[in-house]
Length: 168
Image (tube, rainbow, N blue to C red; front, side, top):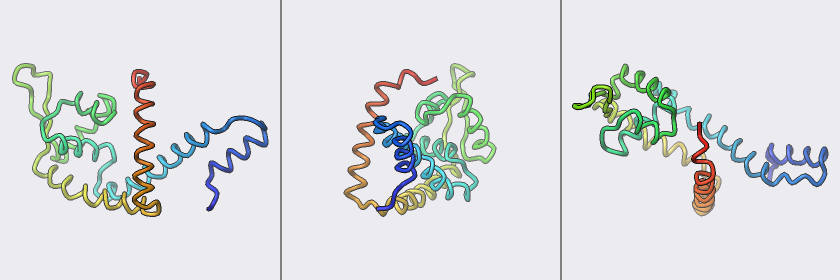
């Protein structure tokens, strides 16, 4: 098996600090490197459609929930700040992919939904995007992908429990 860049970094740390426990770096370093590479690769098909990953996530959130959402609900669903969601919603509204409806009781509250164009776009993109992402993971095989997904789910639950309240 070929050596990854993190293995080289770990070896260098062992040369500088023999006996240093680099096990956390082995995991977190690889997760960070994989995340950066996957983000770059999985964004490519979206860029061809003129979308960012964050805009795609908003369209996907509105589609999968199947109901109107407020900007605050979208922020929670997409793990983004309210300001970031507001900026992205403006872009999606300008492209006529998302519609805004004021609340009947409180005009400061907006309810957002997909337009027909937005629904058509996400329905067309999601199968292609998932196929592309599957192709990126093909080298692992189905059993290894399942095992990795389960291990990452355990880590995510652990981190959300420990760090969930620490987000800015």
